[in-house]
Each structure stands twice: as C-alpha cells, then as structure tokens.
Image (cartoon, rainbow, N blue to C red; front, side):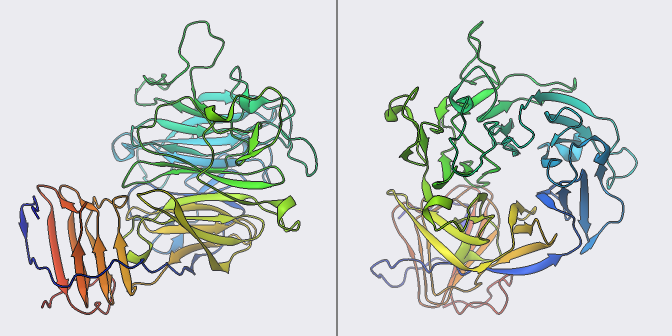
Length: 468
C-alpha cells in the first residue's frame, strides 16, 4: 500500500479482521448556558465566542461561559412579533474577521415581510454591531402565520443560501400550499435561494450557475432549487461541502433532504406534489423522475398518533472530542423533543438511530469554531452542548469521512479506515487491538498520519505517547 504523505510517525499493520460495524453513538446533553429568551439560531464567528439569536430581535454573545449583558445586535424595534416572528437566522460572512459583515433574516414590522439585511461589526468594539442596516432582499408574505422557512448559511462555494417557506398557514387537516407556491417558479416561496454577497458595494449579485437566468423568463434569478414546504434549518458538512435540509412536513411526513457537494442547481424537492416520498396532490405535478426525494423521512402528526412533529435540521459532526460521532448527521424534532443520528453509507443507504434523550422544543443546532455541536430549547431558553462516548469499542471511518483538520480517533478495540487524510491534516489513530487501513484510505502529501496500538487515553484530547 502506498501512503503518499510527508512522513509517518509509526507505521504498522497488525491484525486482519472481518470488518465489523462501528459502534453507534449515544448522545447526551450538557447544560452550557441558561437565560436566553426564545432562542432561534446558534452561530460561531470562527473564534472562541458563540452567538445566539432570540426571536425578539437580539443576538447575544456567550464569552468565557457568560452571556454578555449588552446584546451584540438589537433590532427589537424592527421585528414584527417579539414572541413568534422576529429573527429566524443569521450568518457571518466567510471573511468576517477581515470585513466584519454578517447577515440577518427576520420578519419585519409592520408589513410582515421577510427581510434579509447586511450588518457590520462595530469598528471600536468586536462585541458590538453597528446600528447601520443595509437591506438586501425583501420577500413579501401574505399570511401572518404563513411558512417563511428561515435559514441562511454560507456554502463551500462562498455564496449565501436562503431557505423560504411556501407562505401557507399549515393548519392540521387542510390542504397544504393551496396556491402551489413551492412549485411556482415565478415567486420566491418554497425555494432555496443562492446569492453572491462578496462585493463591497452593499448589494448582491447572482452567482454563475444559478439555473434560471434566461432573460425575460419571469423566474427570479435568485432561485437555486424549489419544492420546499417549511425548511427551517439547513447546514453544510464542513468536511465534504454536502448540503442538508430539514423540511417540516404537512401532516404525514417529516423529511431530511440531501444534496452532495457540487450538485447543480434546479433541483425540485417535490412539495406539494409529494410530502416526503408520498404523493400529496395529483394535479399540476411533474413526473416523479424529475423530483429529488428526501434521503430520509419519518412519520409526522397524522402517522404517529397525533403526538406532533416538526423536524429541526442539524449538522454533520466533524468535531474532535467524540470520534464515535464523526460523520453522523444529528437532528431533532421540535414537537416530540427527540434526537436522532443519521450516517450515510458509501455504497448507498444509511443508519438512522433514535437517541434516548429528549429536550423541550429543540429549535436549532450550531457549530463552534472547532466543530463541536450545540442545541437550544426554544421554550426554556437553555443552550446545551452535545456529547457522546469518547472511547467507542469499534470505529469505522468511511470514504464519506475525509479529515481536513487535526484529529485524534480512538477506540477501545479497533479502528477500520477507508477515509482520506487531506493535505495539512494531522491525524492520530489509537486503538488497543488493531488499526486496519483498507482500500480507499489515503494520506495526501503534506498530511501527518500517526497510528498507535494502545489503550484509549484518559482524556479524549490527550495525545497518545505509547506504542506497540
């Protein structure tokens, strides 16, 4: 086997085993911070701080395990409803450290429109935002209770993605999206939008590759994809660039949508022709071959005894503290408070595991600068850190688990690796019985790969020192 890396601290190969399935992660929650009022979104500015938005119009900073008393941003006077219709989401520019720009999606007063605006960090205080607002995109909504979607996130391409709802009220037992907005390409409802905010002239442009840019076609150029109902949260896998969307269902099905990195625009996620992968409304629907069906769906309100359901999309874990969780997508359900982990298989299919913990109304997830995951309860105002086992019995890293940053992977028995260690990554594998490098494993030039046969260190962050 040829390993193309700069150097290897210790190389070996020890025992050949028939590959066994990796141990499933077991999640737990650790209270991280209390005292928020109806939190909605959690973001990192790629430093030691966490930023948390509240529906009422404030973005708060958690620094040194304390909520700073003065909000980073306060637009309370501008939001429609400080209880339910305020800040939905916010995102920091990829070059925030240099340009100080960030973006907020909120429901504005008095006209109930969805407003995407640019703000800037204060020149004199990094814990304060300037009060100057630059409106970028306004989406009119007819219904005060209509679905607005609500996620904004920068993709690996540097463009800003915006999810919008179908503007229907979503009442139980009624026909969803009666105006067929999500399929109608003449409006921005029920869509995934993509814009370029890289210029410094306080506006945006349409990225090359957006699929509907023909002159005079009556289709807004911002549209990247359609067929979404109420996509409250989306995220990008920081290791692969893949897109994940949690889209709230009508009555029957909740769905998790997936697009691999570099998938071209123009996809149709199916609503309201389909709810999940199930036919919903027959008329005005394209053939199913034209649809992008969810990677995963689960029973919603009408199919689970009326216990309620609203999927809350999460993140693929790429942190360093819990190797058993690496590569697993973590998501939740707002109504039931249940959490699940989903892991894709390179050959197709996936494993989906219901976790035992619950939380009152989990509303969002967030990543810190190191890729560790957090979640928040909308009703209790508590921010939690997600945890898992630090030393699983067996660990399998697949081709879907590239490693870009320094990591220590450890297991009590064995590690089986089919993954790629990318340039500049420093990776330590520690296992007590065996470390198997199978076809698909590679270490790029510039990477450092270390393999040690030893017991798990006492701490998940410890560096192995012994070897056999």
